[in-house]
Image: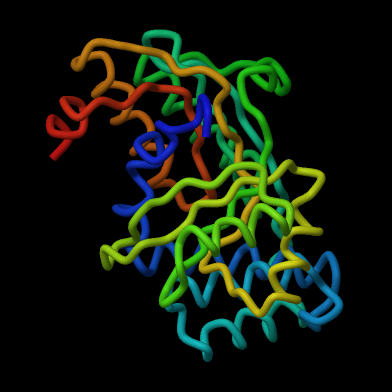
Length: 251
């Protein structure tokens, strides 16, 4: 995919984050809670909940945990607010943070503190929107299919771009991109084709990458780590061009 081939390295933290199962389960449980509050506890009539359940299964979240999250949310569960933050890390790297919180003041204070302590700057909402494109991103296992033929099927179903990648088990998967507007339609098409993605989400894809020295890049990656470790943070997006040297320095 032109301009987006380095997205797999930009997402270098995803594997490490997935390894922290309890943190990942907590994030998905929050998403389930918001989905239930928004559209009810029946996934058949609630596309957002259906996607959350699909993503929960994709990270092997136990069925009991999923059902408990739905049941709790359908009752008098916690009400979470969706808020976003935009700012710059050292070196001019753009940072976009998505949160779900039950205490707006706490979250604002935490995010501002991380920016300040790590020599970044918190901006105003909308100030960085031009640096990211909102796209639908699907992780689809190939498992037993002919990759070339399967790729053509997905293109015919509405995929804009497709990248070949491997998952944590070194199995071949497709990362499929759609426009934000086509996200729900493509998801429905996959259901009709009996294809189950292990992850489906709207993500913010940088439209250009910022090149920094290894030391500068490591400083940015440590800031991203700090954001991702906060319980209120659901996702962190950035436009740093992550090099192998930066990744090695973080190990």
